[in-house]
Image (tube, rainbow, N blue to C red; front, top):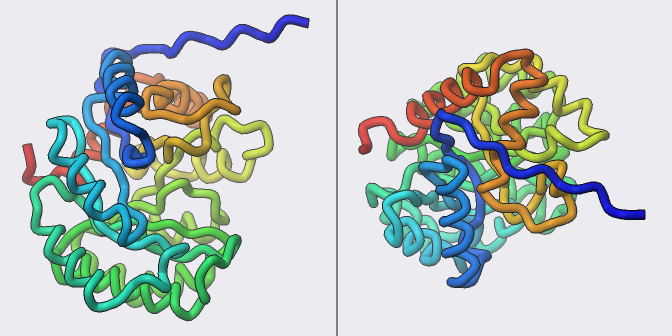
Length: 271
């Protein structure tokens, strides 16, 4: 039996901002191809995300390698046990760079538990304080940690002048509603296209258009119809189509609003 032909990547008139991916996982040749293909389908800006002390330098270098790439600085909960005074100093210093647009990826992950949960919570809180002090938005990862995420954010959200995004949102509707009430945005990616992701689509329905961000989390979470292949920013149009379908709106309208949301959160005051 022949395999079903995959669709070509659609293109739209509205430029698209990729708000969360990991370009440092690519070698030089792969990066060049990825950026070229992304530009061809209308991806105008890409935010590549820091996760560990080992890639803070790589992310910063990538953010300076192209006018279309920006970055973040932060320690993922998987790497929470590597956080310390030296790492914090580095993050604080790097966040002064105009190519760094957020503190992240920070948060809690109780699904994998790669780091002690108390250490995760402390590291999350310390990095939220960096964002408070520097008046920067945050990029938050939370998985199977809804209650603790909410409790910690309750202590910080009022002081986070620019709030942030709960990226790759797969948590419960209750946490979504709380975060939206507190002024956070929610990031949606290829999971929205998965057959068994009705819970995520339920959150998409409940999320106002002016609180939606689009992302891939590449090289992970490739959307249908390319699921099974390595993900890349140039698959974002498929995610936009699905989110628009779930919201019952025109995809160009969704893209325009998502771009406005991304610009307001990450690029306020920047060119």
